Image (tube, rainbow, N blue to C red; front, side, top):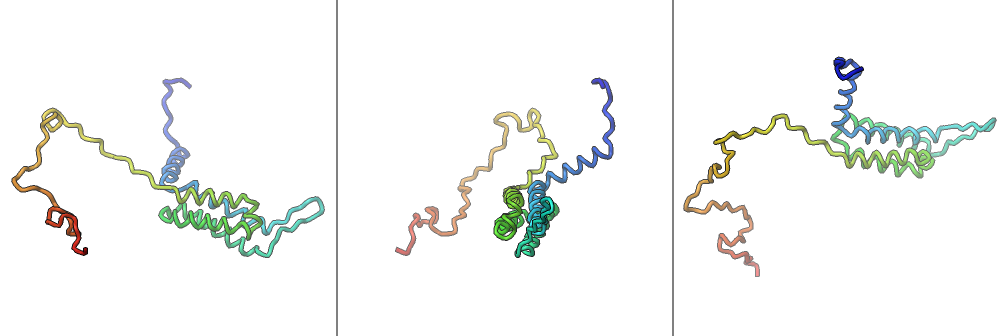
Length: 185
């Protein structure tokens, strides 16, 4: 391939990838992914059976239903962060609180993996802010004699009355004779 080789037209994969990148950039994608992934170890480990040779180690606890509820809620919060970006603060705080509750309920929060993912994802969701949209119009360049030269800007109208608008609603400005003093004492 040389420098003179014409660039190939973007295919379907390239087009879909650029669409996904544009979609991902307008929402807290990574926060949603971390929160979504945090739910799986929290849901899985209380119901898991570990095989060590011929020995089966059942890790079921009495809080299995609580672990399942916490895990499902974290998965739902992760998906809602992707598709409803305006709930990011609520979903982030809820993910952090559910991650903290999973420590005593769900085998140390899915052996700390789910707990850490929930904390990181929740913090990312709370701290995410939408980007500033790009300016589509370029700034107009002033030509000579169109206000671009020094000293050609129009001056504001100058009358004999001062153009001071009072927005003081307390009635204590010196303009109305109160000299900043209240009549209460």
